[in-house]
Length: 302
Image 1 (cartoon, rainbow, N blue to C red):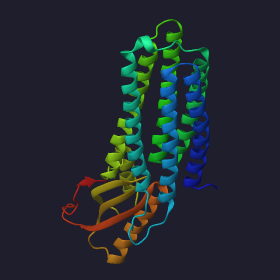
Image 2 (image 1 turned 135 degrees about the vertical axis):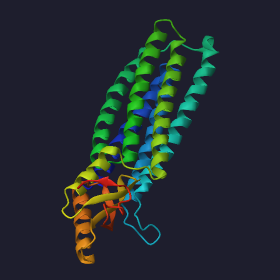
Image 3 (image 1 turned 90 degrees about the horizontal axis):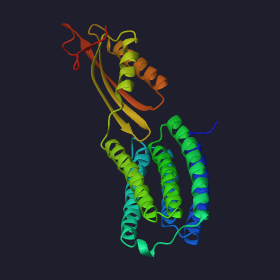
Image 4 (image 1 turned 180 degrees about the vertical axis):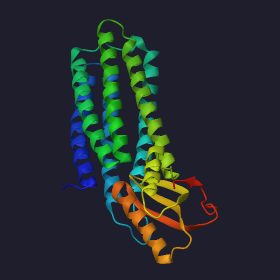
């Protein structure tokens, strides 16, 4: 059975191969077919190659075991890669946008595109949408932020090819202004994706908590754990594709230390078994006396 990193690497290597082919075809078609929009789309595909290589590097680093300098492992390498990819996307978008704006003020120098870049744009739409679908499927399966970022990079490329298609087609019909406008639309698509990925990666680097549904799942598991009378404070933080949990539970104050420990250990084991993305959990045990005044969060479950 393939590990999560092997699955990620497999789909990423496929993406690199496709993007090398698409980049070459788009740029050549853009030059021969006289379309700036297609050349801009080719530059976007070239950035896909860089981003996919970054994902491979992130996967490799993330898969290395914890060491003396990194006691919690290296999963945040995936989030760091997502952060870098977002900056790359925004740089690409600004580059494409600036060149397109320059072209808007020099329409007399623009040539009417041929049918070649129009055909290539259709091919690109199909291939990039396919890449998005297979990549996001694996990304969701293994909960990889870097792979999700790469998947949306593919989707943005598909959308930019749609814009290129409209621009090239309109230019062929005599509306030359549509070619640079299409390039600007491409730039905006790329910028939007870059900003979204940047926001998500920054949040995770700042120890973003898991979502509310996942937190409720933890509470539900605790509720069904024999011996847990109440919940105290629940703290969570994402660690790349994984997460760490700190949970305070209240038990009968008359229990022995060993009995309290056994309840906590059972709860830890249950949460890790049911929630695969939880890499580590620490359960603090407090005595439940005088109506659970020691229950920090005062979350009554029993």
